Image (cartoon, rainbow, N blue to C red):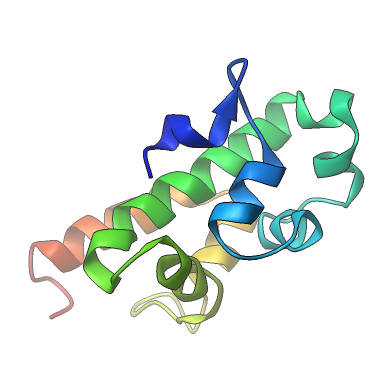
Length: 116
């Protein structure tokens, strides 16, 4: 799916994301390091922090989807696969710590053969 398919009225919609990734809104909140209210209360969904975290996760999942066979598999990778060079941390761990850019750079490095 395109990243805009997860949006409505210019905002990422946790329920659309959860449906596409075969999970729940609560799990999406935990995955991006936010509380349950951040994805269930309308005013919190609109917050810059919530929207940024959802966008970062979706960008990374969308980067990985063609490499692993789909969005749901990419989401599982995002949550559970330790990344080489990051002391056992997953993409999810790094995004929660505010380092989504490191994950995007890591994916591009793998494509370039750095960690092959």
